[in-house]
Length: 348
Ligand SMILES: NC(=O)c1ccc[n+]([C@@H]2O[C@H](COP(=O)([O-])OP(=O)(O)OC[C@H]3O[C@@H](n4cnc5c(N)ncnc54)[C@H](O)[C@@H]3O)[C@@H](O)[C@H]2O)c1
Image (cartoon, rainbow, N blue to C red; front, side, top):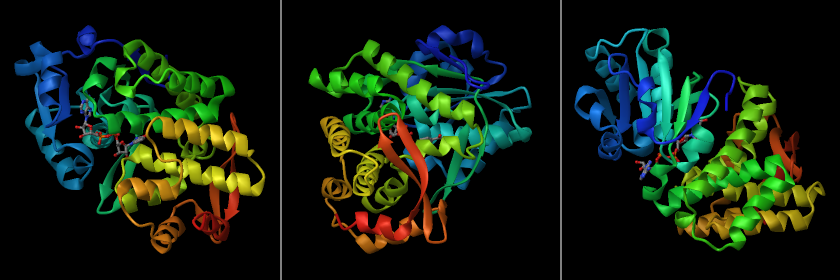
């Protein structure tokens, strides 16, 4: 599969050695994944140039970015260097920004190791680091030349991280088509636990999901309009994520549930479809509404704080918010919604 510039490859990392020539490549991975990455690339374990960064979201800081620049300097990394990022969305976001800015841009290869990174974070060229609580405040667009998807990473992924990725996969299915949603409904009917789905099923699920994201990215690489549809669930989701501390996908799932509630109250979505999406999310252990998310996090819902965060959203224009509103499966639209109407959803 090919995006505007990136080639997506499937298979074990060791099969792609020709892309990873030692004199040009610098590997970057998190402390938690270093051992596993070395096992998959035994020859590069000693000979390769490795940068190790803190685990998870804590690597997306200016301090860590500066340490990456110093490591690149020590490795004498020049314009022909390729940075190979092995990790989840946190590592790829940091590495993408470092690759974009080092020597005004060097090559980038992404090796996503989480479900969310395979279907979402590695696709489309966006990268970012955080400034305090301002998530993804500094970032750019820098497409990787290759994305290497090895589903062999997934069995070690904790259940909550698998579920978090499923939220974005279900989001893509709702954006896409009835057939795609039925694929997940049939998967749910099998009652096979997420961790036991198996490599073939995951590969199918990932390819389908990537195809949806790619469609939006290729139509609107720089996120000026069409790509905004991928924000389905994210307006409420970002606020929920900040206040509950739940993983990103859990907050997006709750945000999709809230967007669906708003759509039903406006008469754009029928309650049967709302029920189907809610059942799917819950089947995979995800919250399908704001109250459910706060319940899962063991926190009391703070409406005022939620509303403040929603008002601070960059998509707000005066009293209106550019909001992704579902009209049905395969039919979501970006509409200007009064902020007061969003506040009403918080009462439900
Ligand atoms: N750039 C984009 O388009 C985009 C899109 C979506 C999300 N994101 C970003 O992605 C980040 C979230 O990414 P994520 O969900 O992949 O989480 P993550 O990268 O923070 O990783 C979550 C945890 O999983 C661990 N982990 C990773 N792979 C593993 C494996 N194979 N086995 C065991 N543990 C493993 C990590 O060490 C970490 O502790 C956020 O910072 C978000 O902003 C970016």
